[in-house]
Amino acid sequence: MTDQSNSPKPPVPLRKTPRQGTSYMAFRHEPLEPGDPLLGFRPVAHVAPRRNSITSARQRAFIAALAEGGIVKDAARSIGASLEALYKLRNKPGAEEFRAAWDMAIDRGIARLEDSALARAIEGEMRWVVSGGNILGRERRFNDNLVMFFLKNRRGERYAPDWRNVRPGHPLYEAIKAEVLAEMEGEKGKE
Image (cartoon, rainbow, N blue to C red; front, side, top):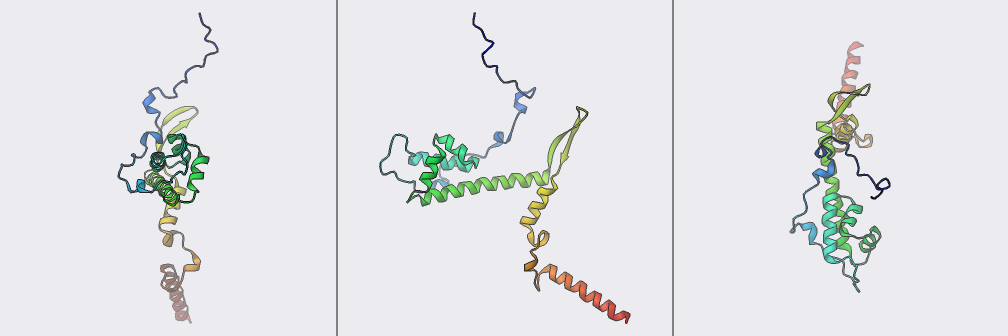
């Protein structure tokens, strides 16, 4: 009989139904199509390729994984390469197209992140309401800071005016001007 007291125990699921334990990983972006323009870059050629070189196929797989997930470390793992090797490859002479594809893949990840944050700002997120250790229900919560961030960055002229740019013709300038002129007219009438 074997002693199983030292053997590792399987992890205990935190949810009663395992499928409920989802995360953003359950809704990852669709993989790139083979004809995607992002994969049309000229790979970095190796002068003396070795068994573990990052070949053209691995470079394209890395860019595809990076565009899908947006995280360099995860994309590197997906092709079995180190971050150090990929950054060296990125900085090599002749790697301009690889570097540009890398940057475009990161931009796709940022765009998806922005879409996700905007959806959360608009739709809010469901949270459990707990009091005294008892679950009372769920409620939708909105993040006002996230909403203001989007308004200031996407509608800055209205929600985050740069006072240095407020000149004649700017709506804020014209509103203040009209208010001051109306106030001056009101004071003239009192005299």
